[in-house]
Image 1 (tube, rainbow, N blue to C red):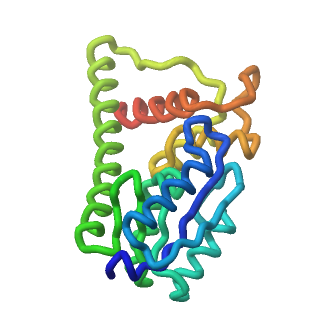
Image 2: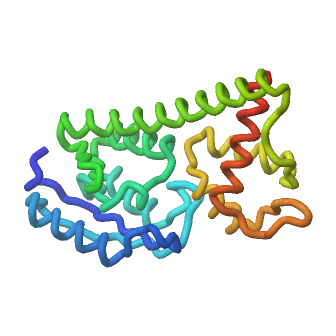
Length: 221
């Protein structure tokens, strides 16, 4: 489908993340692209929820997806991929859904536009590259820990107060594609405990420490 034929829903999401671009910047980028690329129409949808555990946890996005499924729009556009998803699994699932239902995904920061064959290929490469990077990081961590264990006879890592069931949940979320920062935000929103004597708030480093401990255990067999 040509750009001039596209009826686009522009998804804008606010966030407490200081690194995230503001709704105003997202809106301006989407409007500029609509004019530059000649979209037939652009309807902006703004999500004011500070965070969400999944794509389905955002009511504005859910309504947009229903409009796309029903054929009331042709494409979903975001200024930046992390406004839509920080999970490789969620993004891949969204691309599959778009292909099944006959609408397109446009991510301005990646130059991805699945309304074209080249854009669909680019989106698949992007998702695959992200998944590969995570697997390579995991493999390098296991190999490094194994070498240290063989050389010193010791397991690396500090003792942790984080409950075992919470660490297991961290690993499951991380393996499913959630970023460490997203997991920390989710746990802070839910009030998940870090263990007696620990500070109450989660951050990226706490989550990654739990992931590394899990990698050490896996390497140990």
